[in-house]
Amino acid sequence: MNSIRIISEADIEPYLDIIAEIEHVHLNRGNPNHEQWLRRRISSFYARGAKFFACHDPIHGHILGIVTILHEEAPEGIEALGARAEVLQIGVNKNHRRQGIGSILLKHAEDYARNRGVYCLFMMTYAEDYDVIAFYGKNGFIPVATLPDVYGPRLEGNVFLRKILKV
Image 1 (cartoon, rainbow, N blue to C red):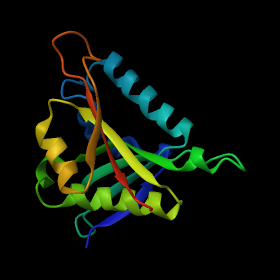
Image 2 (image 1 turned 90 degrees about the vertical axis):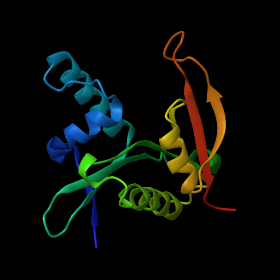
Image 3 (image 1 turned 180 degrees about the vertical axis):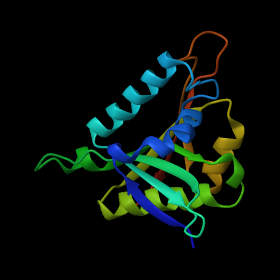
Image 4 (image 1 turned 180 degrees about the horizontal axis):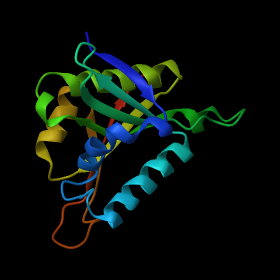
């Protein structure tokens, strides 16, 4: 049985390679500019209240994957503002893909959000990443919107997907 645990910002170092790959296949941690960008991005997620959860192989201790979830709690009296949560990042170690780890991480994200009273869990991904979109679909997420060419001309935009957790 794999174990999932929350990762504090102080303990994020071992997860940087997988997070870099999630962010962009060409993000090069050997490039100081890329490394600074990655660390600022992670810090901004923590500053907004995001939670990082990592899945580990309990026998060997290998990092299997990571999911980052943002649920901003509503101010008192305005429940609608806390009704949604977002999967900011999800990724599985290259050596452990196609073994159900991504689905385990998504299920953990759903349970985390559901336990916080969230109505809808959503995420966005690159519109041309068909395998990722199919993976989300297999896990009950449906595409609800496309934001075209946000990365520039001749580049696909983002697809937004959601799953209703509470009816």
